[in-house]
Length: 146
Image (cartoon, rainbow, N blue to C red; front, side, top):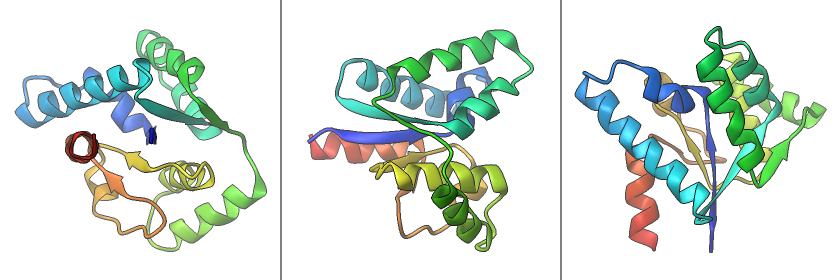
C-alpha cells in the first residue's frame, strides 16, 4: 500500500538552510530521498492551499519556484474549507501556531499517513490524528514497512 505524505514549508525549505550543520545536512538528504520516492511513485504527496499561500510569500523567487513545482506532483490537493479552519482552531487551542495548525488540518482532511516537518517545536506536539515526524524518522518507518 502506497503511503501519502504531507511536507510542510519548513521541510520543503530544508535544502536552503545552512548545510554545514550536520543535522540540517542529514535532514536535507532524507527530504531529498522522500522527494525521490514521490517522483518514483512510491509515495503520494498531499498539497494544500496553505502550502501554496505560504510558498508564495517566500521572498526568494528561486526557492519559491522550485517548491511550487511540487504542487503539480501532488496526488491530492486540499482547497480551503470551513471544516479545515475549525480543525485548525482545535489544534491552535493545543498551542500550535496558526499556519502550522492549518497545515496539520489539511493533512488530516486528506487522510494523509504522515505529516513531515523539520520544525522542532511542532515535532514535540502530540497530535492524535496524524503522526508528525521528521524526514529521517519517516524514512525509517517507510523502509521498515517495505
